[in-house]
Image (cartoon, rainbow, N blue to C red):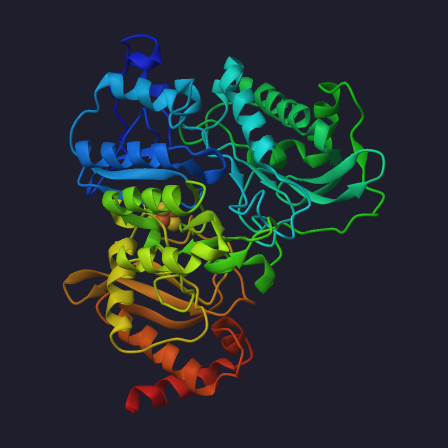
Length: 505
Ligand code: SF4
């Protein structure tokens, strides 16, 4: 697991193997990675936006080289799972022509550029960030020195949309915060938190380029950490934000401007409901373009079949603008639907076995790779999560969204804040056996996962424990109260009593 291999590829500009130490640490399109269910090939889709032609090509590729199993990731990449044969070199060229594959192979494993999936269509946005996403991707593709970036070097653009990405993890986040009379829209620079630096829209790419080149200067003589390039967080720990920014300033032709506090301060690490829009984009929402709406469609753990992708692209092409937008919450949107076509779109989506409801247990489900793709995992999170929602869907219905997160270990790669329910994978000793299980947490107040409600529950018993928690919540909550809020206002012994009473009923 996690062993990377080379795929022959003319697009690499030569028929050569990379030295072992240069192999990327993140899966990409040109470098598959071995997961338990087969090879995984990940397409980097800047901003998550695809047109119909790209979707048709990806669906054909998945049919030809795998079992047709696709998955949207939590950086709005699209990956083909269970790849079972070597992809022909001419295919890479076609993918590059269509803009699905990076023009520079070395850029391929660098983390996808994140933006709100409602960029350009959101009624609340300050700015359409799509041109910035494209400009930064073009910069990456045309500056060979940036091939040396850590694959985990991550950038996000937030345009002030209602579907905000500010709570998601990015090394560098540029968050639009207001309009200045002299220079138009202004962004706050976040480096693992708000730096207080304001950046004009026209300066964004230069600042990112200077941040990247200064980071590369830092990495030049630094030893690898556990065999990997030092990350931006290592630089921040060594130098501190202030010293980093002083060095960045030396690489810029203009002065970095410190905020005079005329714009609202927005925290990248806010933990309010507003910062957790796992479900805000699901369902039908009016766009800023009058007469048009977008529809957010739930994909359980981001999974969809090639035929569903193909038919969604057909639908988008026939009834809307032909655009699909992948979200970092592992769902997707069809945008630019004329309001007169909404009923038809909803019907066709249902015919594909998909839905747009936030109040289904599979809508707000998050899981890391788990043991099918990560050597650190104690449990098979993805299978357990899908089996749990299938089981509970037979037994109960919910009327408010419930966010559930499965993590294969304490690192919590897929979700960085406590949400309604978090399950952390563990190995449990039972007699002579070691079995997979979970510690189960709930609530949002306590870091890192909420409060522990159940300890060492086997994977088999876990759905019953979650069912009990959901039933107690539904019976005793206030009318409009999330599960996290309900748990947070209970004393833990009172909650345990309610759960054990439910057990006896
Ligand atoms: S949370 Fe743990 S098990 Fe899951 S992907 Fe991250 S390191 Fe692997």
